[in-house]
Image (cartoon, rainbow, N blue to C red):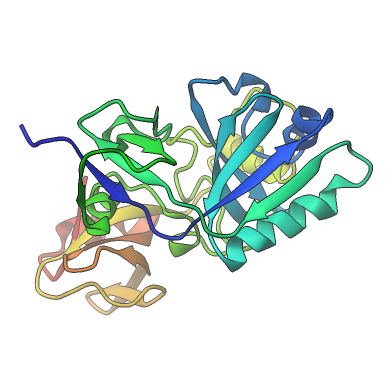
Length: 259
């Protein structure tokens, strides 16, 4: 058994929200049920366009009279901050942003709070634990093998949907809550099974993964589009057309479907 270790995650920011209308404000905007957020748990959720397309994903932390959003950093954090302020209108909420914030993933020790997407992604904490630190690629490889998207690295702004990125399988949606922005399309895709492509983990047997957004072909036929990959490895995530899955599974070329 390997010793416990931590990984400093890349590109994380933090948004602080407080005020008497805090829960109602977020409840009408995001894909998960804010009323179920508890002090000892993290909640994963998305902010979508009114048409149900991806804008931001984040992790919600419960505080005493406030909620923290562990989000993507830099310009992405600033964009989320600006959008939330735009939706605030007359709601009694105050919002602030730290465009860069340390977040660590912990494996082998219960330090912090469990990653809500999958138990194999360990625990998340804002404080650096007293553990040996491994390279970011150690975490990235685990994430990719689980088929879990990493924000805008894998989901295209104003184009990707939650279901094609499998966020329903990673606890990003509450199907029983009331309306939220983008809920209508998300529910329709779910109930009518409208998805025609999905994010999947793949391996390149004879080459390193191509750049993100590169087209992927098998036997001269387009099967999908590359998304993120793990540096120094031959694995990555790609948006693969469902009607090309069998063709990919039967292919003996350079691309292999994982999981």
